[in-house]
Each structure stands twice: as C-alpha cells, then as structure tokens.
Image: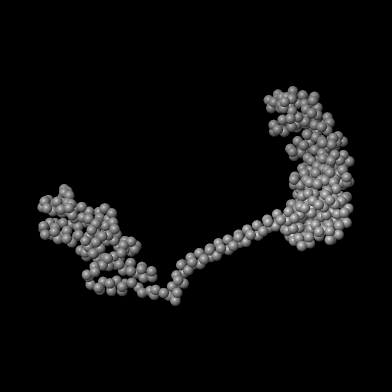
Length: 513
C-alpha cells in the first residue's frame, strides 16, 4: 500500500511517445479497455482474397477501403505484415470508445487509465530485464512498517476499530442496564401484588370487627399482629398500605372514615406523610400534601403553610387547598400574600372549598382586597359575588374608584349580580371610560342597575359608536333599561345597521343570541 502510488507513476511514464513505439507497446498489452483500431487503405482496388478476409472485413469507401474495428492489438503485427507483402498503402488509426482519436489523444487516454489505477501495464516477458530495474528505480522506497505492530501504524484503521469497540461497549452497557431495570421492575410489581394481598385481610378485619374506640386503644403488640414490624419497616410496604387506606377513606363514610384516620396515626403513617414534605422532589412533596389533606392531619398545618407561596404550581395549589379545608379559623392572609398569579383552575378549586367552608367558618374575604397580586384581588371580588356577600358591597365601593380597569370590570359584574343599586354612580362613571371593555361591562350592569342618566349616556354611546358588536351591546342594555329611550334611539336613526340591530333585539327567537 505504501509504494503503490510510485509504481503507478512509473508505469505511466514508460509509454513510448513515438507512433511506432506506441504501437509496439499496445501489441504487448494485447487489449486495452475502450481502445480499438482499424486500417485505412488508400488503394482503389485490393485482391479478392484480402477483401474477403474475415479478420479485416474491409468495406469500400470513396477514397479506398477501411477495415472493421479491432480491439486485439496482438493481431496488429501479423495484419500489417500481410498488407506490406501486398505492397498496399495503409494507415493505422485509433478509436476510443468507438470514436476516432488522434495519436496524442490515445496516448493521453492510456496514460490516464494507468495513472488512475484502472489499468495494469503488461511487460514483454521475453524482453530485457533492465526495464524492471528502471521501473523499480523510479518508485521511492518506503518502509512497510514504522512500528513493531503494523496495526497501530495505520491510524485510520486503529481509529475505526476504537469507534466500533466503543459502540459495542455502549450497546452492551445499555443491554445490561435494561435487563437490570426490567428485573427490578418485575420484582417491584411482584412485591406490590404480594403486599396488596397481605394488607387486604387485616384492614378488612379491623374495619368490620373492631369499634373506633378499640382501634384507638390498640397497643403495639396488637398492631404488630395485624401489620408485622418486619413489613412496616419496608418503604414499599408502607407506600402500599398508605395508598390502600387513602383509597378506602375516599369511598367510606361516617365511622369507617374515623377508623381509617385513627389507624393511620396508630401505624405512624402520619409521620411518613410529614417526612415527604422534606423531600427534594416536588412530586413526593405533593404526594405528602395529598395524604395530609385526605387523612385530615391538622397537626401538619404549620408545615403545610410554608408551601403556600412555593414556586411549584402543584405544591402551591395543594397547600392552599389544605389550609382552606382543614383550618378551624381560616385566615386568608396566606392567600393574600401569594406572589404568583392564580389560575382559573386554582380559582375553581379554591371556590369549591371556600363555598363549603363559608357555611361553617367566618371568612374575612376583604383581606384579599389588600393583596399586592391583582389576580388575588380579582378572585376576592369573584368570591363576594359567588358567596352573595352583600355586607362587603360597602368595602368594594370604597376601593372601586382606585383600582385597575380590569378589576373594575369584575366589581361591575359583582354589583350587577348582587343588585347593588346604590352603586349606580360608579356604573355611570365607567360608562364614560375610554376603555371599550370597561364601557361594555358598565353597559351590562346599567341594564340592571342603571337610572335615567345611564340611559342618556347609552344613547350618546350608540350615536358615536362605529363597531357593530358594541352598538348591539349598548342597544340591548338600553332596551332592558328604558324602552322609550330605545325607541327614540332607533326611530330617530335611519341607519340600516341600527334597524337590523333593532329587529334582532325585538325578535323573541334571538333574545339569547
């Protein structure tokens, strides 16, 4: 491999450049890929024997005769000797891929074949040996091995081998890893099934054979009779036991729930739930919060309160829900002090808990109005509306003028729902606002709570409004507030748009469209 380029270069240099030497060189080669030749005779006539010779296969032309294309150069010397014997004037012409080629082009074609390694030169075995010596002298010497091991001297081969070895090593590692993980998974699944089978019987016995007081008075020996300490010391067994107890607690009612909660504490599973709150993984912390909520672990509330402003959405949501659900006296300051926006999903979840808690506990909703978080303030306004807290209308009235327009829209909807007629001045003020959304919210509230001033303002808005949707909204509000003013607004206006809106409003089939 090291001396092959030198050999090729030397071979390409030994092609004779003169026409006779070149022909003799081709005779030695016998055949060259893509190269052929023919004889052209300038004679007007040739012997019948020569004309019928199958080797030449002469064809007559305007200037003489031409032979067929011959690719075997080994025949050239014999064919030419016969032409010379007949004293014929002939010319040897070359063809490359059946195309006529000059001597120089043919020479270059053959030299390229040799240089590219597409053709191996043949040498006359009967010729002098000095040619081989000359060829060898033109090939530069290069040692076959630079190192003791030839393998390491070929950097490319060594590199490829290393890559292949690394690939197989990684593949083997992955296979072993997957087998180990599969074995662990199978072992865990089998243990889960076994633990579930073991847990069902003692749980059933305790729930249906023992009273609540008996469970509360159980000593350690009795507990170990149902749940051996050797199993309770295993975390997987504890996880299955917790999951089974909480699952039953969700489905049971009355005394059964009390039994399960008492048993949960007797088995010291409440400590396990508390330990989860100190875990670094958010999903484990959330799981601990869920367990605390399901089993009503009131003693854990101080720890739970630390998570009410957590950066994790799930932890934060669960912690707030627990405080709302388990606290004897719900102090909403923890919700007021939240710095993260409260989502619609969180609002729905908290509303469900607060609505239930408001029947048993005194909730200071006005605390939320002082929050630095606008989403918390808006949620507070919604709670006033949802819980029907008419006693807080005065508080809303005192702050309504200084809040953001988005909050004003929520306050207007609260006024409208609770029927706060005393706040009509605020509604009229909002009708004059530059914010179209606030105008529309005020118009909706005015349709229920408005006065004659509201009707005049709506009348002016209809005249100046260019949006079809807004006109429809204002005209609907005016129709519900003052029919006479509505008729005046539609009769005095010959606009096709106004007439279409009027027909739409008066059509009973389209009242809710």
